[in-house]
Length: 521
Image 1 (cartoon, one colour):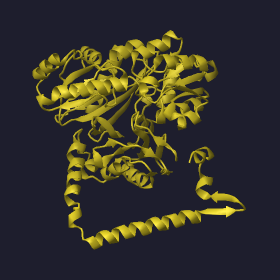
Image 2 (cartoon, rainbow, N blue to C red; image 1 turned 120 degrees about the vertical axis):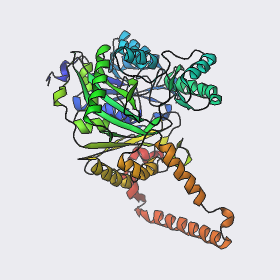
Image 3 (spheres, rainbow, N blue to C red; image 1 turned 180 degrees about the vertical axis):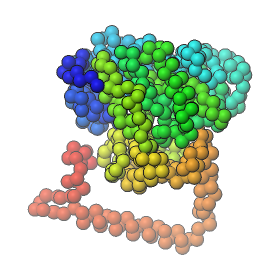
């Protein structure tokens, strides 16, 4: 391992061009390495945890991402004013935007991620498909260029045959993706995909692919340095998705065997070598029922689910990103990577699982996060947080590790039972349900799992709900009376918690919280 002191690195201060839990994750990596961190924030993020934890923080504009976190000129200006020498983009926003990478380089800033050439080759999905095909990696049948107009979209769809997928050309993370089963839905889906892609990435281009179903979504984590070293860190299973966005990830995949892993990791490394990729990235694949795999895309950045790989390999991927950006060789070789145990991640988002996972908002009035053996929380939550609707609804990530998958699932069950978020609807109830589902326990699922199982559960629940007219009036009166009595008891308990010492109000809840938060309350 290279022992060059961080004092001799080409940067000492890093601007983090992101928000939420990933900004906190990068701040902590910088702090452990002895680097200073610079946070940025929009109007609605003034009190966010990443703003408090960074060494410095700068306001960058109103809440809409296009006026703040996607504003390249403002971010470059802040980096200059703060004296930062490097920029870490996190994931989402500008993480895979070649124009942002180029702007950083022109400003003399070190971009913690792949260079412009790799971004162009992999960040734009149609270009990535062409590159993968040239490298001999199997790809999903589909277009090799972006859709120019509605007429071309119809023609391409007819050539491929339905069902098809519409996908954003300039981003990832499930944004700008639509599944089209019938021809009448094509043009409305095209308009929606373009709009969502433009909002998320500042680029509305889309392309078409043949839909492979049922399929597993498997990805391979890799990292490369400027000295010619490329290492893969195993695979992740990412098939539990809603609206093509992941909810649960785990490593290793339940369907993986030595042969399939060797095929997928070898294809990944061949592709990465062909474009002289540098820094961390992920190659994503679909695996069909016949166990044939097809290249989807390369995410040229760190990913939301990187903690499960970190726990199974012992590698701090964010610190390794920073080391690579500083020009150092990887601190490990392929032979030194040993996959140990099993890890699972649940994304906890501000969404209502009972209402088709629609985004939710509100204020976090109480919070209890789990802990104990094998439990990790990457979170941006705190009591008093007002959850905005302007950004991705991800609030936190609950990650567990076990000696095997069974122990990891048992730990996840326990951790979910401990996790309490009051004031905002979240995906915790879905995660709790999933950890007991027979198909998940057996590893028998695909990307259609939620549409098949959760949707049918909701239909059954609605059918079993008693209708209002079926209730006896006496039952209604008793129910209302019970609720009123409960509310009165809660008020009395709350009053008893407030004790008076002299003329000063005293509260154990207030003592346990941060004074800054309580002043806002």
